[in-house]
Image (cartoon, rainbow, N blue to C red; front, side, top):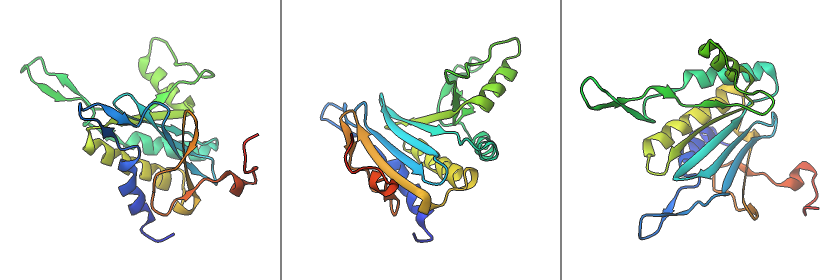
Length: 201
């Protein structure tokens, strides 16, 4: 791959599952079940992009290696935003940006959210045990797509130590595999390249 592979990936991520609208302004694509996966062949790290209401949900798996997981969490914690919501400012009656995390940990069945007197300890504990983190954008939020693309590249490059050569892309819907979107020089994730049979059993 060329030296500008990260730049190409950065430019292509905002176009993943880019919506199509009908004449009434309703989203006709992507539909529920439409999913795109970026996978690191060396670490097994996965980033899923999936249709989620009027936007795209993004799920990031946490690597099993504790040292790599710590690096990923440190990169996640550095990524803050004030773009994703607003709250009412009751002092002046207007709206103000809501400072919230770009990513949030998803509690798994093995590690339920910690409840107790100290909410901060519970939140910190959840961050440490969560095996997946989520973020996303609404279809109309162009600035959010670009910010999240930057965050994803930082996680892959600085968090997991991924190289562009290690990345593979695939796509599927509720009926099976589909043609993955163009992501620069990221190669398609073909089962046969991993020694699997060409047809599902």
